[in-house]
Structures are given as structure tokens and as C-alpha cells.
Length: 278
Image (cartoon, rainbow, N blue to C red; front, side, top):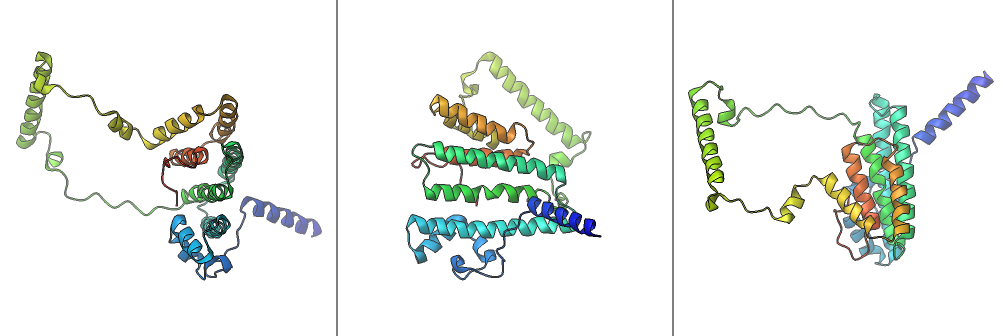
């Protein structure tokens, strides 16, 4: 009986490590929540909350750090509630997925600490506080990906007329003939070299807009790394490689990771590559 009790205690301790809890009840406000509940605070963006908090407490950097800390506690509490709900319904991630995410999370924190310490100038308390807050997005994103999604509504009955027509219908044949005719004309004009059919080169800025968000983030991250001195560049590149190299991640998670890494490397006066995550 004693052995069973000890075993139960060990299992409970391990479970607590795998699913850390951050006690900040959504229905009760503490001193740094300005009388609001976590639910009310999270209805605001982090920027809106900081503006509200500093308007009451003062605009000193220390007050901004306090505001971000309060927002972070509420964000953690919401993630804890989501994780608990998924466990209760049996819809949550399995042990292997949790272990993979914990590896990603640890590597992210190591990269963030290195990036903030090696930035020029070194990150101040406010940027470090923002980095700690934005890092919380990954844990929530991880659990949210397991949240059951509502069924996709049936496609609207009204569709494009030509798509709805049978391929052997007269109207469909006419449309097909019209397309071929216009295509033949375009081809003929191109062969004859008609100036009126010459297509101008696309604007380089338009081409950048056509790049998918993940590729754009990778390119910008590479540019920021390439602008660093060689020693710092190799050091940070190696640390970043520990995040995604040995671990699996969805395209959505990869995009968030690259945007977070870019935020860490951006200089104080730089235009943000992407808006704040929340």
C-alpha cells in the first residue's frame, strides 16, 4: 500500500511538470489588473492594455514592465484552461507531441536569451518584457491546434454559371470556344511581336507581396542575420537551428517562430516586420 502511494505521488509530480499551471483566476482581479478580470484584459491587445495601465500608474519603463507581466499572467491562465479542457475531453496532444513542443520551447527561450543579450545595444527591460510576453504565444498556439474545429459550412448553392454548366452543354462549348479563340489571338500577337500585347515587367514590390508569408519571413530573418558581425551571426544561426532543426513544427508554427526571431533581432528604430501577435 505504501509503495502504491509513493508511486502515485511520483506520477502526480511528473504530470505537474508536463502541465505547469499559472494561477490567475479569470474571475478575480489582482492589484496589477486595475480591477479587471483576465477575461476583460485579454479582450484588449497588449498595446491597448499597456496604454491603459500606464495612463493610471505612470509612463516609466518599470510600469510598462508591470503591465506586460499582468497581461502575461492572464495569457498563461487562459492557456492553462485550454490545456485542461483538452485533457478532460481526451482531445489534447499525446506525450510525444508534448515532448517535441517542450524541446521547441526550450530552444526558443535559449535563442531569445542569446539574441537579447547580444543585440547592439543590449535589450532593455521593456523589450525583454515584451519578448517574454510574446513567447507565450507558442504554447497557446500548440494547444489551440488540438481544439476541435466547428464543421465547415456547405458550399453556397450559388456558384459561377460557367463552372456549374455540364462540359457538353452548348453554353459551355461556346465559352470554351471563346476562350480558345482569345487564346489563339494572344498567341498570334505574341508571335508577331505586336507592341500592344507586350506585358510590362512586374513591379519588384508587387513580386515581394506575392511571396508567401513564411518565405518572406525566412528571407527577412536571413537578411537580419547577414547584417550582423560574423561571430554573432554564426552564434545566433546555430542557436536558431536548435529550434526547428531537430524538431517538427507546422507551417503556422514556423511562421510564428520566424516572426518572433525577427522581433528579437530588430533594432529599436526599425520598422516592425510584422504587427504584434496580440
